[in-house]
Amino acid sequence: MNKITLIGYGKMGKEIERISQSKEFSGELIIEKIIKSSDSLIDCNGETCIDFTTPDAFVKNYKTLSKNFKNIVIGTTGWENQKKEILKYFQENKNNVIYGSNFSIGVNIFFLINEFASKCFKDFNEYSVYISEKHHKEKKDKPSGTALSIKEIISGFKKVDDINSIRSGKIKGIHEVEFVSEFDSIKLEHIAFSREGFAAGSLLAAKIINSLNGVFEFRELIKNKILHND
Image (tube, rainbow, N blue to C red; front, side):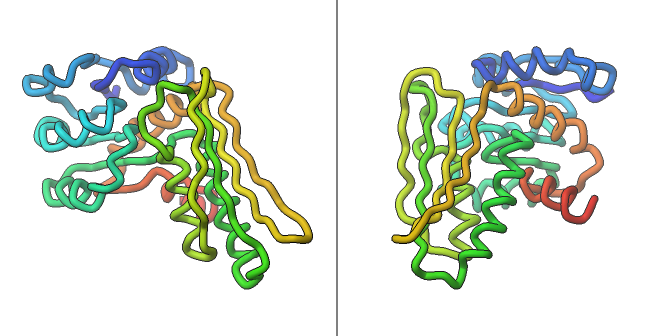
């Protein structure tokens, strides 16, 4: 039984706790501890943790996470500017880490679709690329980590203009990518109906992390599974 410490008990934390009790995960992992305040981290340790806090809290606490946990699943976004430094720290301290801008399986397949589409449009300069994302008004990072990942993927093949971000109401998450010319356009869209997909993906990461050795991005693990059946 993989015992999980859940760090962060906002909407995502509550959803992870709920999904962990489903048939898919019961018997394989259990939420052993819930840390609602990052101040409680100092005296908390275990085998595996899932972090869904805030960018500021994660940047403040990542060294404590590294010290107190062998396996770390990072669902928190908004720390991209310090990614290189933080991931290097985890590598040097021999942590097993899975991080991702989005743990939804659908979104990670959406990443692959956009990678393929970008390759198709690579040599057609008459097409421009536009990315837009919409989320609920309480989401702190802007643009979303998912939108930044999409931009990173597409930028390997095409120039991407600025991301259009909207914060309004209770939108769970909408990401759109449009390839546009003066003749036509192709629009790709992912719509999240609930937080359940994000929660299930983070628990899947917690379930497999014991079999890994090192630091991995979730979308690369999904890509390898789809393309190479790893």
